Amino acid sequence: MHADRSTTRFPVPVDAALRAAGWLPGRWDIKQAEYWADALREHTSPAGHRHTVFPAAVEAWAEFGGLHIRPTGPGRQIAPATLHLDPLHGLHHARTLGDLGRALDTEVCPLGEETDTHAVLAIDAQGRVYTLDHTGDWYVGPDIDQALATLVAGVEPVRLTVG
Image 1 (cartoon, rainbow, N blue to C red):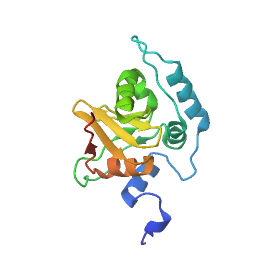
Image 2 (tube, helix red, strand yellow; image 1 turned 45 degrees about the vertical axis):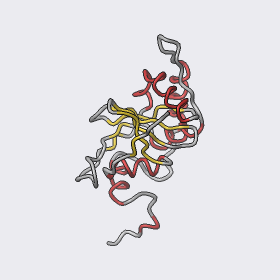
Image 3 (cartoon, helix red, strand yellow; image 1 turned 135 degrees about the vertical axis):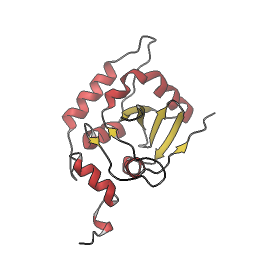
């Protein structure tokens, strides 16, 4: 059976990985998203850093939050990322995310992590997605859909050079 690309929101392997993780079109768990928003807003780091929560983050959590995405097969350029979309992975990164937001002149909030590398996934107020690891900060896509496609398909992200 030939899949018509126009009827799927994601490339076929990405769609398959998302569905295997429990995602379906129309998935929307706003209660869980609000729980995460409250947990992040209430957290203050020992140095006084706080998270900013905004609609783009809440919408991404409502649709994709809680998913453990385990791609199968080789990546196009790099190994596909195994993801856990739970923003509390970034709870203790308020300062790092705040610094990135200031450098990019926006606000940045955690989205989850790449479980193999423990890179933090983050989203900004415009919906752009980044990953932060020990090697630097990376731009993954202009929105959550493109970012998931990039990460799950194993496309190398673009390194951010800030400042």
